[in-house]
Image (tube, rainbow, N blue to C red):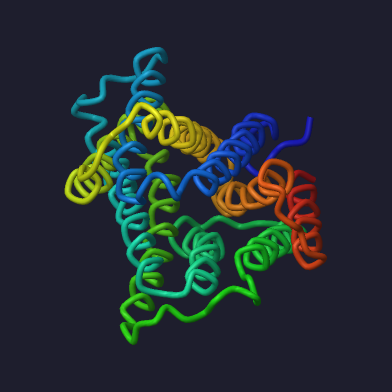
Length: 297
């Protein structure tokens, strides 16, 4: 069986990574379908609740070291810190969308896997083969292409340019989060189940607070709960896939692969929402698929 550079069987980390791609992509497609009925801040609030159900369910059903054990406190602190950065990135991203052009903000945010590769090389010492670097370049280029819409409106009707530092900070926070996640697995007491609990803790401290402050106003109908919990549950499942894949695979490859979820969203939009896929988007999909195949070789 093919293995990664550290001898871990390929399917051990590639399978949860691809599952995460499917769940993230489908979840985002459902968000796109129902975003007119549920405000972004409320999605944050429901995401925290859905993540708590998924992560804590995984935590209590899997064998793991004691979460508060003395020897595992470094791992606990590192894991919570990683998801504080992740939650902050989502908040910054939502704020930048409100203030800036989505065509540009989306492109900037889609570039975080590239910065993750740089961070992994500098801080974790990960080294990939030349073919793997070609693969992640194809994936990242495809993601950037999918997120950029030349025909989209690039004006927001405001001269407020705070979206620029906000979107750049989101980019840095996501890359930092993924790098810390991988680093945390090198610490004593490392466990996927415990990291899932850290995800819920960090999410509650960031997205949870944000959602409570800005997402409680208005009616909370059963329809809204359903149309929020289903996609947010899928996003939570995707995050769990990232946690497992990051344990066994090089983060330099795992992050770009999971970052390719817009391919699934695009297919969802074509099949379910009946949106048109352009030739450029087909080319981007081909680039990402080629990159995924090369990553697995």
